[in-house]
Length: 287
Image (tube, rainbow, N blue to C red):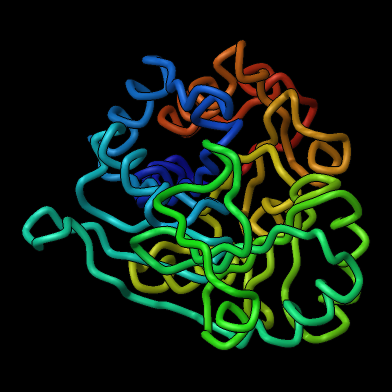
């Protein structure tokens, strides 16, 4: 590649898909370090794109976008089931672009038969959740309304949460039924419609923005980031991520306490993803 070709490559926009919990924000407190805010601001200021991509519901993603100064652009919520265009000119500050719902009835009925004490929550986009039992404070974003399991099973939803001892063993049966299921924790399973993931939503965003596939990067720390890692031209795992996530990445940055997301974004800003910059022995992301 000639010098002119390298300069032209670096002038084209990058798309950075960023997980929130454990990547940008500390899960327990939702604290976001100033170094991350600064790195995002520099990245966007030169014409690159930041897209938040989270398992959180939309009502949990929007405050993070606002706190990061991301008033325009795109955001992906509910593990790819909800995509919005951020626009400060609209009444709510966003417009729904894509909402993928499914019938939760079969999962609700089979899960309750298997685990009668299971807590189940069904997302209501932009508001919160209908729940069979109240979830402890901080576990769900937005409001909660207790409804009967029958009523919850009878309304389509974008995201279903199965929570309780033994919930993890429901993951494979849910997938066998044709739905998408992510084991967030041993007692927490997220369910969305068939074939959905952060990656499916991000691919639509990438195409809309006109970003080349080779100019995409993903930074995350969870199992629900694995599809996103496969989608991106370059995947960066946080240093505290589980082994399966770190092994799936092209590079591993620092932990949350080491400001790993800011380090990775800083390397992107310079368009120089070196092993030294990302604390990993890996090839450069972009050639």
